[in-house]
Length: 293
Image (tube, rainbow, N blue to C red; front, top):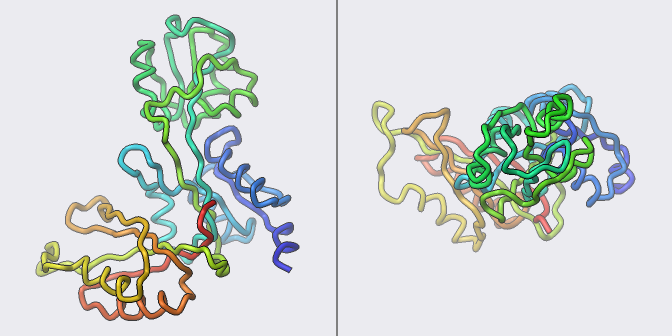
């Protein structure tokens, strides 16, 4: 009984609590009606190691942010690429930033603003408006804990609303991010992906071989040779992006999402033909999972 098994599952979350990653984890468990216990890990790689050791069954880790022109989380990608893990599901979190302090204060009197570097970057308009000095912290939770201990009303923090509630901080302003439609995609990862539901998508990564002496392959239609096999089977692609491999500007890894489950016959046929492509150096199915509602 799949529902009964869900109750027994053990989850790993990227901690500490009171961070956006923790919020995504709590939201996922609530939406899926999981009553399972969860364990916090201090790093993304630690979440993967927890699965390897059998401490947890699934872990929820950040994968892709819509800010900054779609920024992938390299530590998550590296673990998915190099180890035998798959994406079991996904959770999408809308990123709303709050400005908070230990007490009600005119924001013009704020001298220092603490938060995780990525959170600070997403709120620079408000920070510049205030004219405060930024202080990067390891996490939004760490930032909240620090200003609580310092007990200095001229210090503020940029955090999720739930974090302000946990640390009993006063919210001065809500939704201070530069862009109101910021979202982060979190991957629920495990040793296996999900079962077919009839409303699925599949995430793939692939790379093309280099040309002579390690130079970038410049043969025309290289990407089309991959995409045409999807077109033949009438498989829709919802997302594709290339990012430099290991920091190189001569080698790129492509990430794409296609509609359907990897066990669907048309995807099986398409991937079989794609693997025959002589220019293809690497192809991996990262997982098939339900479309996010």
